[in-house]
Image 1 (tube, rainbow, N blue to C red):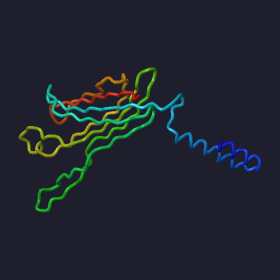
Image 2 (tube, rainbow, N blue to C red; image 1 turned 90 degrees about the vertical axis):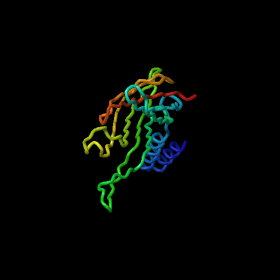
Image 3 (cartoon, rainbow, N blue to C red; image 1 turned 120 degrees about the vertical axis):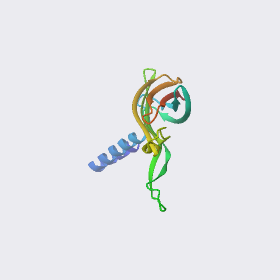
Image 4 (cartoon, rainbow, N blue to C red; image 1 turned 180 degrees about the horizontal axis):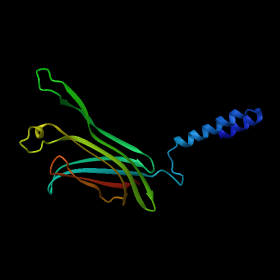
Amino acid sequence: MKKIGLVLLAILLGFGSLTKIAAQDSDTAKKEEPRRKDGPLIGYRVEFVLSEFDGERKINSRKYSMLLQDGLRNKLRIGGRVPLALSSTNNPQFQYVDMGMNIDCTIQEHEGRLQLESTIDSSGISRPMAQEDAVASKTVIRQFRTEVNTILESGKLTPMVTMDDPTGKGQFQLEVTATKLK
């Protein structure tokens, strides 16, 4: 109604710029309204599980979950700034390094299946490798990053990525479950 009123006012008064303003207001409202073109909003609960294995034995597992709307980009950030000593003198100096988990993802329903587009970036301090070499006893920062498009079934745990730890003999596995909200 606001747009129609502004357009009528512009026609009556002969101001072409008011029709431009009305059109811009309408475009802005469309961009701000998070609605699907073909219906109401659809939500999903998405849970990522990052597990670390030593051979066949699971030694660590972390869960990250978020609520997503169909077609909208979401971000999760968790971590900290870790001090790393640059020297071991009486007056040590430190450099701070950001470490943690970053997840960016978008989910869309297409023909009854879910498409999850995700970028996962994880970093942390690795255990030193068991070697006699002095370099091996230094702090090692381990990081992995993956960008994956995955097709999921709602409510079903799906392995997304499996990778070997480049700083040791371990392995990482990233799994995801997406469940449609009612």
